[in-house]
Image 1 (tube, rainbow, N blue to C red):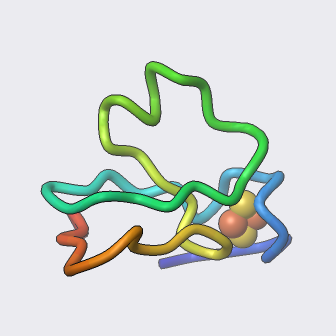
Image 2: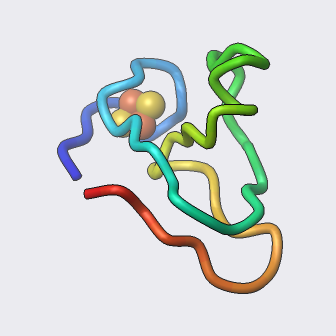
Image 3: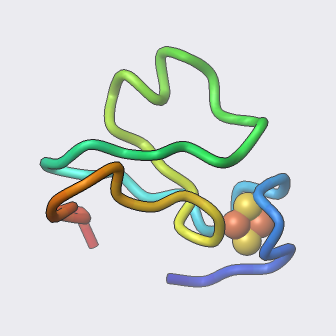
Length: 55
Ligand code: FES
């Protein structure tokens, strides 16, 4: 994924996930974006188990 800030505030690394539970560690995604499975890959990670990214 392309990236820029690597700190979770620019949104460049935003990606949609297809499955899995996300441990969000950013401060910019809205609740609807999170509910839709969007994550920022530079700071967020799996909350447990596998994540499938829509690359
Ligand atoms: S690279 Fe900026 S939010 Fe991920």
